[in-house]
Length: 551
Image (cartoon, rainbow, N blue to C red; front, side, top):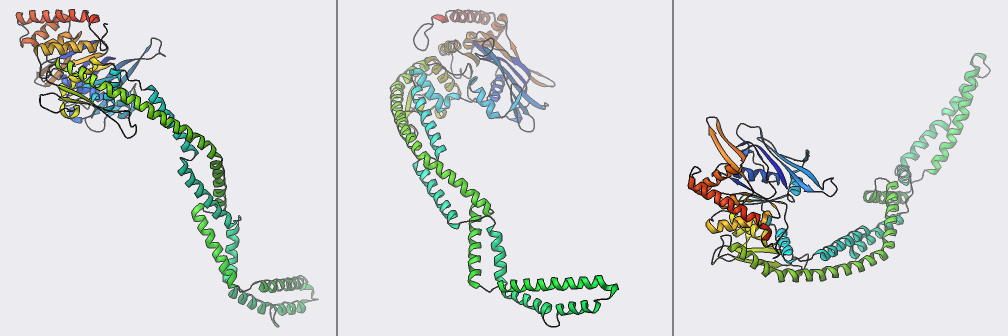
């Protein structure tokens, strides 16, 4: 439940704190005093749109912070505290915090939706969500969906396992065919590490064979022909032979002659191996192109292609061995889908059978809440995902005679929607621990106001209720009351929020009754109203609950 709400520099509120009780808390004050700012503050904690224009004039930022207490079986006293905070700067993006840690606004919203529900013209209205309307029908009728939920979870798990095995039969067959094609293509190429480099060298040799031979023949002419380099070396060595000063040089020249003879022999052998072979050159170029194509598909180098083939071979073996396992899972999936279908039919039948009863109960409640001519229908339809389950539940309302029933988000005003929520909470259970009703008293008075007050008191037996109201009957029905007051001076306008003591409540309720808080008659009426409501609350344990029992 909400323990404390702190609001700073939001709209006309400079600094305000609200500490509601467990039951019903009323927020009252003159029109325009700033009561709606309290609701807007709570909307910000539920992830509502942050409007920089709502920051108080002259302030750098607006801040809203709330302390909630939630059940926690692991905590020493069975409860733990949760602190939500939203900061809206005058310029820039808003920020959200949970327990002092910065979080995305979506995370704040996801947490707050289980803590507080707001109903009113400008509120985030949880009742409008199709899932909420379906849950309301299920709670009212006691529709048991656990077996369906388990069957759906089983289907998801089996599909996940199939996906890990390679998907369904068709997907696995496609992957198997692709793997076999890829391996056949790579294996047929009979790749060898280093082959690309060897082919590069051979292509260079074959592509320049004529030029290579011409160069070798010219070199041989220079080195080995009569009068060539060989003869020149021999002649130089002979001239220096036997001459002491040149003995070392003569010996080096002799060695060079021997080395030159070896070089000439090697060059002749190399020349003999260089042949012009256009057919082989075409083969080498074709092979190199084939390697390029394979590398473009499977890796940058031949070694990468061979690595891809090894991995593909492992995956192929894995899929072939998993065929039997997949067949077993397919059989289990068929059984699980059949179970989903059976449970969907049972749940759908229960929902369709319960819909008229919920519609009648809602209409009966709404007629006592100043909607005497209303018509309520509950439409139950199937979705494509769950044929037969009736998981698309829509509450249809016609508030006025002659109007066709329509979805709540289209036909219900803020006050009417709040009363629908009230009626729904009275005929069923569930929902977050804290409920906020804004404008629930719109367009009503007299006995209808008393009926709404009693309805709020009924909801407050199971939930913490905060209600913004202009009606004395509703304010008097609350166990706690806060007055929202606007003060204007020469410097500006400020709204204050103050908890009222019993005597102060009499004054405030007097103002709400007659507009004259100093009137003795109004005060007597206020005292009587507060006393009557206090007596009504004290006998709440004898009021019928949603299921007809007395609590």
